[in-house]
Length: 419
Image (cartoon, rainbow, N blue to C red):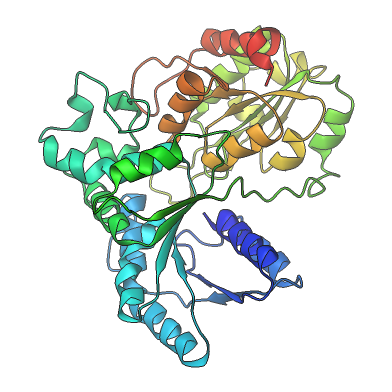
């Protein structure tokens, strides 16, 4: 969520240069974040944004076995004394007008309340997920069985009903600590002053009407402010990358781009099937291909060994119309390029907003977190994506080459390719 938070700080500073913005940063549990360098860039500007890097804290939980939601929530809990000390120090020297927190930092609401500082949640995903989480305490009280066992869609007031298997992952096992933490954060949402949501009315017009229906109280409820799209849109970053040079030689709107986010990766057998699907499609493609790490490693991806993973002869047979890149690629520069006409995406919210911003239609391939919700909304409610049929309802279910071929042809040759 770091890039979105930094963009929010820049946005507020530009709206009101008299405001001083202090951003407290907790170190990542998985090592340096790919977005960490972004803080240095912003800190070097003339904007009145200051970053405070909090020191690491020790966790007693087993990092290998705990779910990400549990890890992050426990980590934030350990930071309460440090954040409290910093807020008290700020209050002693200046007036603190507002305390803006991430969804996973709702335990800090109590810290701000002790100092009479109004708390706002900056919600880095969209209105659909926010509405579900606001409704979660009621769902938890009304339904005793597992949500995924429901034979009907999950009703979310003010929003489209959701198939149970498209719920975000920690809501699919109510016995897990990750679910209990999600429920805790959802309950705490009802205590805040307002929401800043990384979306905009033209994309999700139901937001303003949905939240008042979902918030407990006298009907007044918290303020709901769509502040998006907040994106780091430096299209010059990576403009000299070899991928961009390759795109320069392709016809307008002819390339389908495949990328699964900073932490997204596919197993080797699925990578081979993707290669087969792209070859069958006959379309031009740019593919950021990463492999999953060996079992037991915390890092979520590694650079792919293309010769080892891909089908024999694939790179040679497709070299005139395709480029496979085994590591990081400059996604913003690619999506903004004239030759890109489609995007096979994991449907992370930042990637979704970037595709909408640059007018690039999607093929949805969700992997984890709330991505299945985003994909369902994009395909079935907004009509901005072509859906992929998987072999089962499991999050990591296999996608056949023929199905990818169908979706790519539909996007690149049909009316779906127009946004």
